[in-house]
Length: 90
Figure 1 (tube, one colour):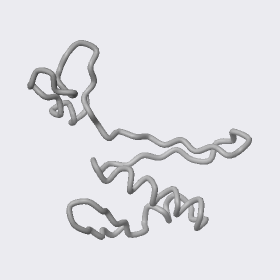
Figure 2 (cartoon, rainbow, N blue to C red):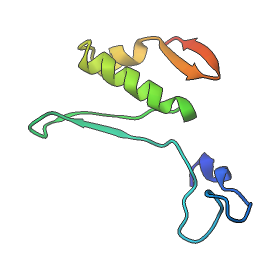
Figure 3 (spheres, rainbow, N blue to C red):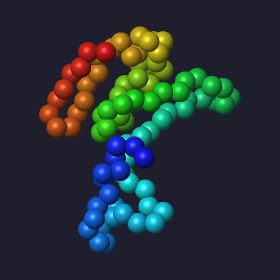
Figure 4 (cartoon, one colour):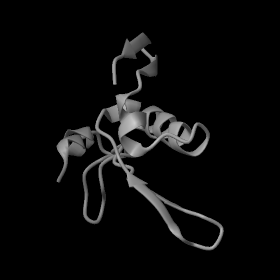
């Protein structure tokens, strides 16, 4: 179980209540990228809870649109939109 197991609710009837065969809400989202011929291009994932979709998109755009290699994409500054605005170095 990942750290989002605490996301279960103990409130009866809640959409995320604990129960048999239920899974907690989480933001785990590994990404696999293929080209049109189903050739393997990339596999990536990131830490960061609610920032994961934003980080993964920024990494993908850096590699696919700007032509950066994975290390260059990781070294770029990233921004997060949510509770305020945060800019973090790569």
